[in-house]
Image 1 (cartoon, rainbow, N blue to C red):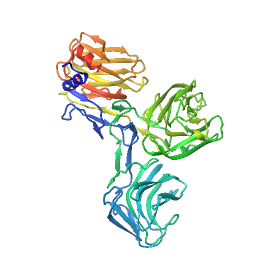
Image 2: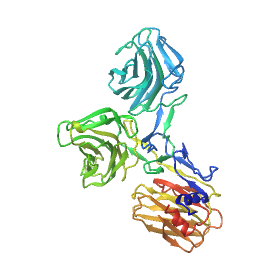
Image 3: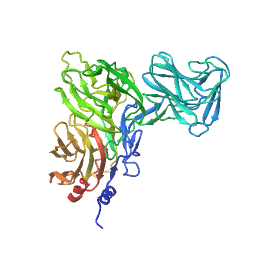
Image 4: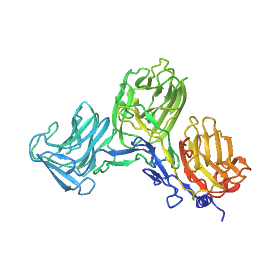
Amino acid sequence: MVPTKRNKLMSFFDDASLAFLPSGAAGKDGKAYSIKPTNGDGDFTFSRGSNLSATRVGADGLIEKGRENLLLQSNQFDTTWNLQSGLTLTSGQSGYDGLNDAWLLKRTASGAQFMSQNKSVSGVNTYSVYAKAESGSWMFLIGTASGYPEAYFDLSNGVVGNTAGSSIIEANIESVGNGWYRCSIIFNDSLSQFRIYPTDGNASTDGTTEGIYIQDAQLEIGLAATDYIESGATTGKAGLLEDEPRFDYSGDCPSLLLEPSRNNLFPYSEYIANYSPAFGGVVEYDSTIQTPQGVNGCYTFYDSDGGAYARIRHASGGFTLNDKITASVFVKGTPNSQMYLGGEYANESCIFNLQTKTLATQQSNVESYKIEDYGNGWTRYSVVSIFGNAQGNGTEYSQIRVSGDSSNKVPLWGWQLEAGSYPTSYIPNHSGGTITRGADVCGGAGDASTFNSSEGVLYFEGERLSLLGDKRTISISDGSVNNYLYIQFQGVSNTIRIFYKTIEFGQVLLLNHNLSNELGLNKYAFRWSNNNFSLWINGTKELEQLNGSTATSSVLSELNFALGNGFDKFYGNAKQVLTFNTALSDADLATLTTI
């Protein structure tokens, strides 16, 4: 039987000493798992930071965030929740999910009777509760104090009643079947307590015997009530966790996404209404539009007076002349509009035709732009500009300007401004200030028994993020820069370097190769053995040196997406990493880097 590509590939996996293949089940908080060695010695340690600001594209094509239910005992209302004396609480009720873990909250006295939990939050948040009518049909939700966002919900027919409060953004009610509704209020405020009232009607907190069923309360950062997360004595978390590696499905197959630390300088990346529109601009919330995250609710923007362009903008400080700044935003559909995106100073914007999803004009201080299809009708537009404010105050006025009219409303989501020469993945920001996504750090895979210092192959399939910036490295070392070998991407020069060095013999090899498509997805294999060093790229031997000695003892003990000392970290997408403890033949290396 003639070997197939799949059979040959599986043979390489069988022969590898370490095999890392990203997939949805290949990691957890603090770890990225290799499939070989099978005892866990080949697993990477992983870190990024202490918040939930990172995102990825999931296997369903949607942007996945880290999510957290900030309430404690979110469905154990007889614990950390405070019950006023004019209420009773009975557990074991039939819930919306078919389980008997709902609660009956019932009045026994008149007046403003409520159940509450103390929790301090600020910025844009969503407070939600599942509820069903019993002897009463109205529920009142409120957050205190400050702007007092509040809403009444009619549980008999599924409509939102009166809303009030200077900080409320939106109130929603969604039927989930069998008389149950999920009721939510979205607000932008600093609050310290969240309440649930059974009431006798709209705009009333009174009553005497009214009761409602309740279940699964949630308080979360952002503009939408997402899938419920159970919490207990600590907050509940789901989605992409703080130190969880990001297996990103932007392409056909998942890759490990590694990025530098970046700040989203826009204080509200989804709450577009925060940015005051000008020149006839109108911002409206539409609860029916599904976002790139897969939840409903985002803002639209249009020009109401038929002028040249309506505008929203935000001022960010801290820049110096000629800094590189990247602005990006997601747009849904193909409205018959044009959009300016970028800075206001010194020709720092691009004009995009949103109907054709093409560039119309690139201004002189724009270095580059991107138009990326994110699926589900969403396109991400990004512009890298050179800061040209010669006034010297370091302030960048970033803008979105659109043409068109009310029949061509432009859905906007995920507005991002970051210092840097290329766009990185979306960083949600609902804080009112800036928010930082920490750098992805991945390394420490293997031990001295995993690698053969005298001969072997390091195989890497992936793509780097940008030609600009420092060197980017995949290495096997002893945890230092005394004994190591690497494949390295050389800054802005389109150059790939392979290097082998040991204390025993000193520098044995340093070879460079120019690669025209360095930013593309490529397959690399570095072979080392006595008097036989080579670099293979996409089926072709690009570099070869037939002299030089390798170590006679084991000096290599860990694989890192960086040098052994942690410098020159690799940033990009890693599709596969394999190591071999024998120097594969030319024929095998050609096959390995072609499959």
